[in-house]
Image (cartoon, rainbow, N blue to C red; front, side, top):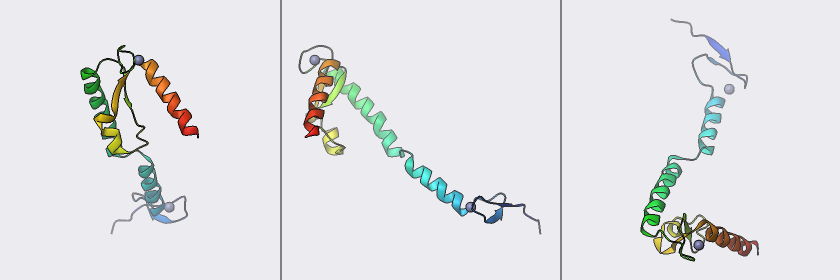
Amino acid sequence: MAWKPRRVCRCGKIIAATDLCECQIKRKAENDRRRPNANDRGYDSRWKLARRAFLDKHPDCAMCGKPAVVVDHKTPHRGDRAKFWDKGNWQPLCAHHHNSTKQSQERRDDR
Ligand SMILES: [Zn+2]
Ligand SMILES: [Zn+2]
């Protein structure tokens, strides 16, 4: 029988040198949980595409008619996916008006 090299893990357990200790597996699982999952990464690129397509169709700011640079949510979506993807809730805004609506929304949120 081949003798397997052993090592002592940080947690004090003696394990095969080529194996991961239970405590390492647990740590790894925790790190994976903290990382944004594949869904959220896909969601970013999906939003980038949708946003560009929307601005192609609606190139002017809804407030002043200047070139729009952002798609704004008329009703803040607050993480609600349905509201987030509802095109009826989107409006094209220039940087100036995007900033001013964001600020007034934040003021409202303060209450
Ligand atoms: Zn360990
Ligand atoms: Zn504007």
